[in-house]
Amino acid sequence: MKEKILAAIKRYETIIVHRHVRPDPDAYGSQCGLVEIIKATYPDKRVYAVGKEDPSLHYLRRLDQITDEVYEGALVIVCDTANAERICDKRYMIGDMLIKIDHHPNEDPYGDLVWVDTSASSVSEMIYEFYLFGSDKGLKINDEAARLLYAGIVGDTGRFLFPSTTEKTFTYAGELIHYHFSRTELYDKMYELDANIIKLNGHILQNFEFRPSGVASMVLSKSLLDEYGAMPSEASLLVGTLGDVKGIKAWVFFIEEKDQIRVRLRSKGPVINEVAKMYNGGGHPLAAGASIYSWDQVDEVIAEVEKACEAKE
Image (cartoon, rainbow, N blue to C red; front, side, top):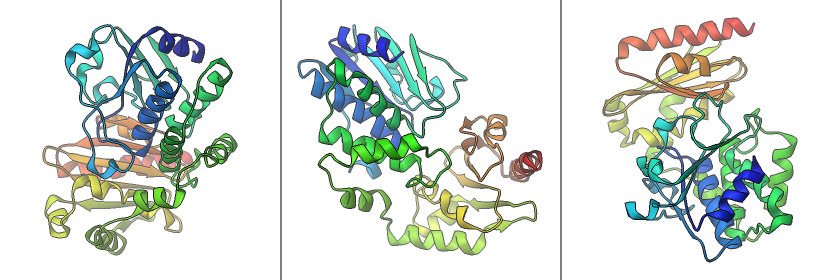
């Protein structure tokens, strides 16, 4: 599949790379890292990274603004997006050819070419692997691509703490740090939080519910977020904060947005993406997301997470 993807990249003069809505460092890292690799290798090609920008990720890269006409006869590549409905910028459909590169379960195999590796820690890891595959076939990587891919790997592995981190992950990260970029500056940008978000984190640590089943939960209503001056996207950054609780098996955050309640699920072992699928979502076995539309469903979701924990025993 990597050979086919490389052949397509060689064949097209215009290449447009997308990723998922509500991006994280791996979405930006894989998308923009791939763009940098293609640009470094084929400086005469027109290569773009598109989508709605997230101000919190401006430190990684600013995205390109292009017209619909640019898609005519273009190759479109979508990174880190399991389902077509979550692709940011629906113009991905009007290109000439579509490629999917992802590490989530392939339940929506959209695209003319599909490369999915659920064993990969991140799509940024996959993009670096793609570079290694093509390095003796002309592919080049630069310092900016290395910085972006490293950020994506760090972000999706929780600084190498998540179970998805493999020996390969460490090997690739060890190779990427030999390029010229400041890891200290990158870490500062990735993990610094405004004082109000730190205070919200304190509220979470003092008020989360922890059940005898090993399941924890936290409800973040709009009124609470307003009290701390926090956006739902900022609150989502705090989901991992309960991972250090002794005896925890799985946990779920309910974060109120304008038109829905975002459900963020995390686990130390029980498979929770099946729960996410029950509520308009999906994701990895140990990290998934979903949506509900009534607070009346909160207890129901928690009960399903508890069932998943019981099934693990």
